[in-house]
Image 1: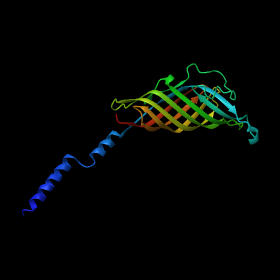
Image 2 (image 1 turned 30 degrees about the horizontal axis):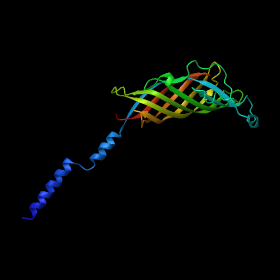
Image 3 (image 1 turned 45 degrees about the vertical axis):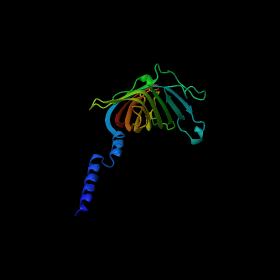
Image 4 (image 1 turned 60 degrees about the horizontal axis):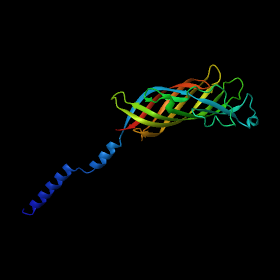
Length: 222
């Protein structure tokens, strides 16, 4: 019976240690700090861009029944539209840029867009159609959780693919629908942000477009 006393004392000491310093507490703290909050919302994307195009050289080889197949660029800075091998019809934008409103917000002059599209204008009797890839680079971004009033600031890069139909140079314009526009990078308080947007563009003209989006975004806990 005398030997049982040290064992009982040892059990009590070990139990007290586990209560005061639970195993895994450090990992739980790290996980909490790395957790993300999901916020959702809607908004618009307003763009003012340069538009230029290049006709495929081998268009006659595919027996084009209409006019041509084009490689089109829509951009806010003269990267491709200033090259000698492209055609840039007027007018140029007065203030090129991209402004997000709603859940994601940034000033027009702090948003940049680069779109590259392949447009099929060959089939007579049908509107032009094509596929495109777009990249947005946004600075001075603010994302706010309306439920709590908490906000995050920084920068974002987004990229997605979409299909379109119609002629942006005509009075009726073109329209587009994006299945997934992904947030690929975040900066500042938005570092580590992920998420995706769905959006539609009811009408895009030669130099401007307004789109409507729904977003689900995972932002880091501040």
